[in-house]
Image (tube, rainbow, N blue to C red; front, side, top):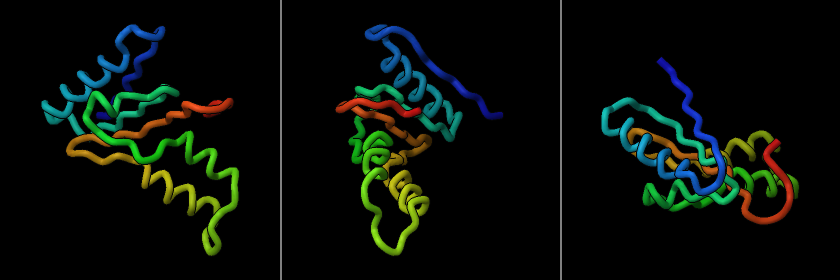
Length: 107
C-alpha cells in the first residue's frame, strides 16, 4: 500500500532530523521503496544521510530557461537531467528541490 508522509512546520523545529530518522526506520524495516523529497530551499537532508547532491530541481529549472542541446527536445533533456539529479540508494531514492540562490519558487 502506498503512503504519503509530509512534514511541515517552522524553521528549526526538527523536520529534517525527523525525516532522516523516519527514512532510516522505514528502510531498516524493509518498508521500501521510499522516495524522499527535500523541498527545503536550503536543503540538507542529504547531509544527515551522508549523501552528496550533484544537482537539484531548482538548478535544473534554471538551466531549462537557457539554450537546449541540439538533437534533443526540451522534454527529453528535462527527463535526462531529473534522472541525473535523483540519488538512488539501497531501499530509497532522494530528490532535492533546493534553490539557495536568487528569487523564484517551484510553482
